[in-house]
Image (tube, helix red, strand yellow):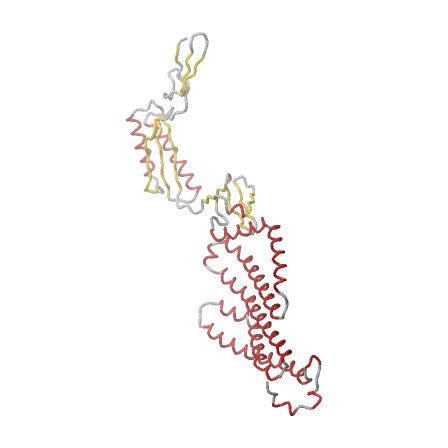
Amino acid sequence: MNAPFFLEHLPAPLLAPGPRGLLWWQWLALPVLLLAAVALGAALGWVTRLVLSHLAARTRTTWDDALLERIAAPLTAFWAIAIVTVLQPWLALPDGAASVLHRALRAATYLVFFWAGFRSVNVAFALLSAGPWTRASPGLGGLLPLGRKVAKVLLLALGAVAVLNELGFQVASLLAGLGIGGIALALAAQKTVENLFGSVAIGVDQPFRVGDFVKIEDFTGTVEAIGMRSTRIRTLDRTLVTLPNGKLADTRSETFAVRDRCRLLANLGLVYGTTAGQLRAVIAGIDGALRAQPKLWPEGASVRFTAFAESALNVEVVAWFDTTDWGEFTRIREELFLQFMEIVEREGSSFAFPTRTVHLVGGGAQKERGPDVSAGPSRDGGAGRDRTGDL
């Protein structure tokens, strides 16, 4: 490059060689250039933020205003680097020093870029936490702090690798060492990583939420907390069950919080002494009691004589009720069961229970026959047991 025009006006001592092969005026010009770049960068950064803030004020969102506030310092540094890049040819540096300065400027550019990304992470996750999807999913909201930390760590790692590579360090060997260490760490923390990904799967799929009443494996209870490693469930006995999220993500779970109605299923066994007319009257009475319930879901309700069971005539009652409140459903069920008893008693029938007929054979030997198809009060006043045979 041609020598700058002002060199002929510099005093001779400043043109003398200094350390590292640079002239003394170049050593003095470097800090002056940096200070001027910082000052001009601050001014240009202020103008840039002013223009962008006017544009952001026209939008209804607030995240763009928060983003401008967060990247104010990186924006100033970016303008300073740009000014040094433009003005550095006037230093007339030798090839070796110019190459070092170019590397330093590229490394500083990478550093400012990842710095701005690091400061923008908080804005991005604040936006996610205020979104409708996160408000509808408390479990997902609980994953956001972890996601923010992971994003920051990734940005720091990528930024460090990029800066070190520009400064001439052997990044490949460093990455190889980190890879071996990462494998060892992953093997040692296999269960922890499994639970971490399990918590992510639960947060994304949302099989249940905090406060839901669930059934998992052989216990039921209310979900109290969904953490990074485990989920805590308060059982009906008021004990606290803790399940690892890695196992829980692969376990069949049933939640009662999302059902839109409750089902009533009852099998009523009537004694075999019930006549066909009595059975028809019982079925009609039970159907009428169901239809009279204001919470009855009209579709799918049925009362049917379904089977000649071993010791009873089976009547199946199936109905759904338009309620998700378990307490309300149990009150409706109790009232209906009492009405079913009144209907059966009114029609002259009764409920059956298993019976056996015992024959007493001569010589004292006893022989049992299978369950008798006859049920109900016996002729000798016993509770449904008919004694016959040879004495």
